[in-house]
Length: 269
Ligand code: SIN
Image (tube, rainbow, N blue to C red; front, side, top):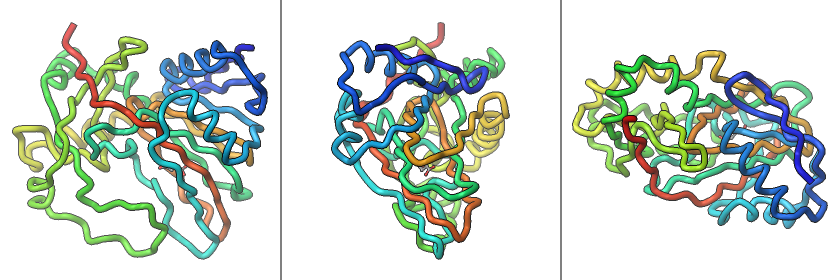
């Protein structure tokens, strides 16, 4: 049994139809899902009402589970986790390769998620800027001390000196997706501190340009959740953003992160 693949945008995203993940499928079904995931950056499935054991069994077909967590925003909580463009946990030496989000309880309206494709964004840059970026590394850190909390108070905004001093892994600014051979931009507004060998102040103009360019509408896809929806994204090549426009309503998701490896730098052709 192979899924029907329906693109959700010209450059990013696909919905996989025709599967019932409670069924016992052969390896080739999961291989087809993996291929669609690597090719489209994020894939969506609908009407998959899985219990915790079934969610873990699905995730385990694609790699080792690193983190399992419930993301629960109650009606009296105003902050949401992930309400800014980011890639999950690039502050780790080996950031998760994939994130799978399973919708359990969703608001009547609002609470969508958006993804931006860093493969198409990189490919749309000029040859000169692509060549410059291919030669760079960046330092990643959790300087804003983001955690898994719906608390209403923001931590104080770090200073330029905090960004300059922040320690963390050095990742290539353009990484390779081995399954497709694609070179993708690998900086993100949440965890990238500065380019290696550059100060934060020197890095900011170029980073800001990339952050603005990377979310042009053609690189972005948006998904409206229903109970039983799943989004499975390639954390190496997309940013995501949880839209926090459902105040006063409950939203409960289950999230699984799959263990990744050190990013492989893309090289100039
Ligand atoms: C996340 O940042 O992983 C959460 C996304 C969401 O809840 O839509």
